[in-house]
Amino acid sequence: MHRSLMLVSLSACASLVAPFVANPARAGGGASEGPSASAEVEAVLDRLERAGDRIADLKAEVSYEVLDTLIDDKQLKPGRILYRKAEPNAQFVVEFTGVRQEGVIIDKKEWYAFDGRWLTEAHETTRNVIKREIVAEGERLNPFRLGEGPFPLPFGQKKGETLANFAVTLVPPSPADPPDTEHLLCTPLEGTQMADEYRQLDLYVDRKLDLPIKIVADRKKETKMLTVTFTNMRLNTGIAGSAFQFKAPAGWPAPTVERLNRDAGGR
Image 1 (cartoon, rainbow, N blue to C red):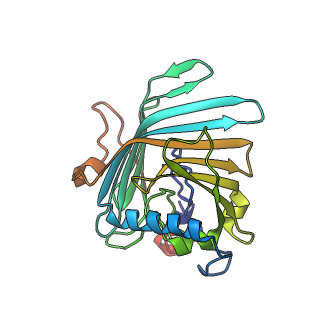
Image 2 (cartoon, one colour):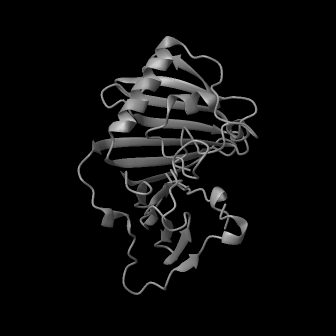
């Protein structure tokens, strides 16, 4: 499978539907900045970038909600996320503990684990495990960076890359906002791939952590509103590398393995 097309579905935190999905900044172009932002917006983006630089690892509870606005149907997946800076590539795990939809609760887990080379996707309902090679052994790739990698985790993005993809404005506080947050409205710039995917992204930045704790994405190609909320976020607790290796429960079939197509450049 093409690596650049390999989006984890958070149903890809893995689309941890991120505020900053990793796509090229501009079709056929580089990552030059877009329109200038206000001083207040630049200050928030600077804090986000500095906070990302300080993260060695991160763990949090996550809520992933998909609202189909056409039929007013809502699906909710609670779970947890782990993230760790590592060499040569960063790592993450997203584990959902079940799904709630239309009053029905299904307590079956699903996992998305990226160990820096392999992405493993597993579902308890089917006991299926798929292991996909995203990066060649020893190859360096930031899988979460705008324009470089396929995964949309929202931690540690650079201000310049953000402004190359979005017009960003600071929204006045609302009683509906998460407590003690700043609300950034990110409108994809014309000519970017983000503009093909999203109408807008709303990012709520915790003033103490200087990290996003809620993301709302209005998808253009589907009638779906995606909301990701992070709670109980803990930084730099010393997460072991073994936490990013998925081990199937006893009795599960052997995983399906999909290697990079190196003849096609792996992307």
